[in-house]
Every structure is written in C-alpha cells, then in structure tokens.
Image (cartoon, rainbow, N blue to C red; front, side, top):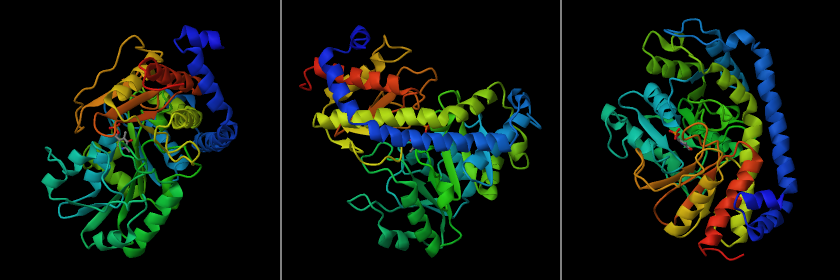
Length: 424
Ligand SMILES: *Cc1c(COP(=O)(O)O)cnc(C)c1O
C-alpha cells in the first residue's frame, strides 16, 4: 500500500501520519455507513413506489410534453424528500439558479425576504440585491432583512421576532455554512427555528437552501416544517453522475410558482424536455447516499489530519456532521494555494494542471478552486476552494469514493509539508 501511495507522490511520513489519524475514526465511519444504509433504502423505496421503469430513461426533445421519465423522477424526489411536489430539471443550471427561481417565483413586489441566519451564500447577494445587480429582487421592489447569528452561532430569537413583520413573505434558511466559519445547522435545529417562526407568523414560507446537506442525516428539512428545499444536482443528490441541474421540492403551490417562472405562466411543469440526461439523474440519486457517505468520511479525515497539526477546523474532528463541507483555516495565502494544489494533484482528471486564484463571477474576492472532476465544477467530486481573504480558510468537499478523498487529503498535506508549512 505504502508503495503505491509513494508512486502517487505521498511520502512515508505523510502516509504514516494519515494512517494514525484514520485508525481513530472507525466508529465514526460506522455511524456514517448506518445513515447511508437508511438513505439508500429510502431512495430505493421511492423508486419502487413510483414504478421507475426502463421507459423512464428514454428522454424527450422539443417541448417535452408527457415526458414520463421527467414526471416520474419528480415524483421520486417528492417522495424521497417528503414533499408534495418537485421540480427537478436540467434547465435549472445550478444551485444559485434554483434558489433564485424559488425566491423570484414566490415573492411579489412589496414583499420582504428575511434571512434569520446571517449573510447568505455569496452568489445570493446579487440575487437579493445586497450587492446591486441587474434583475435582482431589489430591482423588483422586494426588500430584504437579515438577522445575524449570535456570537456563539445560535439563533437570535429576540431579533428574529422583531424582524417578522406584515411584509415578511418568505424566510430563507441556509443549512450549510457555505463560505463562512459559522456552524452548519442540523435538521433538528432548523426545525426549532421554523417552529419559532411559524409560531409568530404561520403563513410565512420557510425555504431551506439545502445545498451540501442532502443525505447527511436520515431526516431532511421538509420533515421538520420547511415549505420548500432547494439544491443543486452537481452536489449531493446528483451522486456525481448528473451533469447539470437543480431541484425544488416542497408544497405544491411553491413548486408550481417555481415551474411557472422557470418556463412560462400557463406552461409550468408541462414543458421542458429531459434530453439525454434523465438516466443520469436517476442513477445519480440512487448512488447519492453512498457518495455522500464517502464525502463525509473524507471531510472527517481532513478535520482530524489538520486539527492534529494545530490548524483551526470547522467542524472539529469529533463533532457531529450536518453537511459535507470541511473548513480548515490555513492562515496564509501560501498554505491555501498549496492545499488546493495537492487536491488537484490527486485528481483522476486534470491532475497535471495547477490551480490559480481568479475573479470568479458572483464572488466578491478572488477565489482559488481545485477540482479534477468528470463534471465541470462539480463539488460532490473531490474539490477545494477558498476566497483569498483573511483568515485564508479553505473549504474542502466531496469525494465520489472515500479512497479518492483520502488520497486528496494526503496530497494536500504533502504539498504543505514540501513547502515547509507543516512539521511532521
Ligand atoms: C453551492 C451553494 C450554492 C450555490 O450553488 P451553485 O451551484 O454553486 O450555484 C448556494 N448555497 C449553498 C449553501 C451552496 O453550498
């Protein structure tokens, strides 16, 4: 084993350090496998109950009327995530698009949007109009309010209560930390927040940005009172196979609004050809529970490796997990770049290129991204990224297989070790 790692560029010291950390993780990995087993059965049950058959994989072109595969997949998603309806489409280009769609279709001029969990994901700033942009919610007269988390990362119930007004139509709750160093919320915590909000204002729509959270726990946010969950198919639920797409699952009315906005008033879900990608959506969903488990194992391994070397890590090596992201605070630009170069060097695709920081559309600071992925930009595949700003935190996620995740983390450590940024 050591020899093949060495052939890939991992030296003995790095390998041994990795083995020492991995030994401690047996029980954690068993817990993850247990959740994956439950979720695998949940997916199979939904596919059986909706009678998925070979005809579902045929795809359609043109208008896509009566596309059996598309309509059945949406029923499978709805059942699996416990919603009344779902919109799962290749025409939804990414997670930001899915979130923008859910917001723009369910809000009207004069309404107010509230985020009770602090600043939302970077790309949503332009959707909302926190940073001005063409076509933002702000341009359509939809206002925005935000209540920051308390300094210990918990909800500021007092100010959330004050922020819920007659105008508040929709509350957006981001499950995952995204590019921040706050904790990710468990489904249970999200449930508590939603009950508080609905207790004050029962008719408000509670939307959860579910990106990176799917299949990490046995429950999903619709089971604790959310009205709508939204996510990307090139993250967890696409299982690494979906080449594009996003989903919205939840209350029938919310999903219908989104469908009328995605296509056109009057057309809604009836149009939208599934082209040649529908089988990968099914197969990806089928694999998603075990793929998510691999990504979780990789994240926990990374936490333990870097915590063991004295770097601040969020979540820490032992706490419970609610998404697949691992943040490691590397404290310098040099270390951030070395880490990403290690992840890239371990990839099955494009391992021979070296990532460089760039001004990515939708992001405020320069960002460095490492991804040697089969699907461009897929972050359920092993990837690392981080904005070039203090405290130089890298956000590491994915790994379609745990063994690839392990190699990636060992390679990142190798690069830091070679640059003299860590001692082993
Ligand atoms: C990835 C992500 C998004 C945006 O998804 P894209 O597919 O990158 O547009 C939004 N919110 C969260 C929490 C995310 O992790």
